[in-house]
Amino acid sequence: MNKDSKIYLAGHRGLVGSAILKCLQSKGYSNIITRTHKELDLTDSLAVKSFFKLEQPEYVILAAAKVGGIVANDRYRGEFIYENLMIQNNVIHQSYLNGVKKLLFLGSTCIYPKNCPQPMKEEYLLTDVLEYTNEPYAIAKIAGIKTCESYNLQYGTNFISVMPTNLYGPNDNFDLEKSHVLPALIRKIHLGKALEEKDWKTVRDNLNSQPIEGVNGQSENAKIVAILEKYGVKKVSNGSVAVEIWGSGRPMREFLWSEDMAQACVFLMEERDFSNCYQPEAIEIRNTHINIGTGKDISIADLATMIKEIVGFKGGFLFNPDKPDGTMKKLTDVSKLHELGWKHQVALPEGISELYLWYQENVPKS
Image: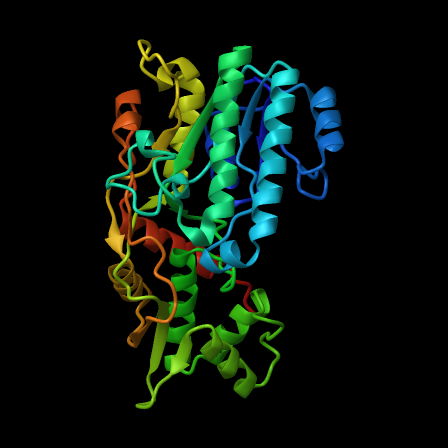
């Protein structure tokens, strides 16, 4: 890519897309096209067709997706499979029809089987059943990988698929119903600290910024306490505060700073092609996607403790075994990415500290 190449970045406002946009801009790319969902509905085939015909981007980074945590994935199964399939099919197909030079498709490591051997290598794709709670989303992302592969093999396109591990960073989703585990823990522990310190201004500012089921900072104390308890921030018998965590706390998870992920994506767009994603002597070309991660994991219980220390929360944790753990271990094998020439930079404690600072600065204060 040249610095003035026309690049369409789909999903520039999300956690992934905003990090990639920041990275591209910092490197001097000056011709980046973006559209909000209101400006362009990527599930609308005709709208996407018109957009590509008008703009004629040279490069495409597809970071737009419908995403969420365990609750959202399990509750909105139809929406997750339909919207993600439509988004990626429309963008990938129009990229082919309009002669896009290179496309980067972003998926997720939830594509791997529920009981996948660890660490998860690219070759383990489609070797067993998926985790039930996020199966619709995973199937959509697997379809995206195979669409890119198939178009490359039939039409000679240059479409690369990357599968980031669990991401966290600026512009993360802190909605307690729909967020992933790390930002959810940050918000709950932040609220727990405020509650134990009887800092009602912080609690109210937080709920004004992002109400929970319609409860905001103007609500009565009792109503606020009740909604926080429902979402796992609870006053316990001795007068202290405890934060509920779904499951046993034993599942192991890997986390990657979103700006590290962005650096990896831009590196691949600048330096690598589809032909670098498989062995040239391969008879069957498959599993050409690339894992993006750290190759290191941590238990949910230890993650919570790490966040607790960074936030300064003095209370405890209540593990709820009636809630699902999800897959017990998800660790990526990042050998392929390392061989391609990229490694992560930001360690987890550093990243959590940065994210907590960002979160505090971005919660409006009264």
